[in-house]
Length: 111
Length: 120
Image 1 (cartoon, each protein chain N blue to C red):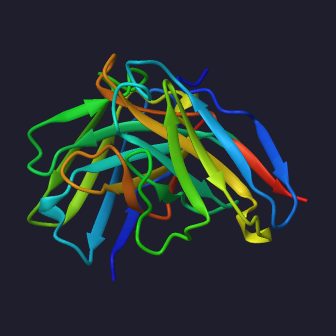
Image 2: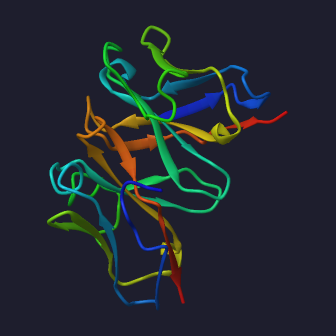
């Protein structure tokens, strides 16, 4: 059982927007800015998409954005494209164990 | 070109040991914290361990504490993961990953992974 809760799957049509949630507690997602999002295509290494809740690394499309409300962080992908179909994971520092925890992952299907 | 290359994976019997290595290039290794993250077949990502840039501070997931040890040799630009008392549920692809900074708890560069299979 993952420490952070994500929906198992989401889907959307090309051009639409989708949002993936990541729910934790005040000891992790809600208490620290160390929230990140990763994209992983099958058989590939994860790729950092968002760091420190809202920041995009250089080279990541501005169609990807991050936000947080209370103990829930969210990743929004606008203008869905076929290449966005992948697994997405959130992560956060947790003060309970002084470690990093991942969400269970969300499979995004582009219809 | 920034690159992380893991090695040392393979098949090992339960209770056995294995040491993974991660050779890095393209950045100043000694300036960054480093993580190990694993992924069991068909499962999600699981953080394993983190070591600060100077090697003095180390952090572990509860599931590997006391069995795994993370270390680094900044003179050789190499990260290590010593895995002892291996169990079937340690079977996974193991990735090394560079922290964005000293300790930001996010990883901007990942290796391609090395497979560890624990089986009799």
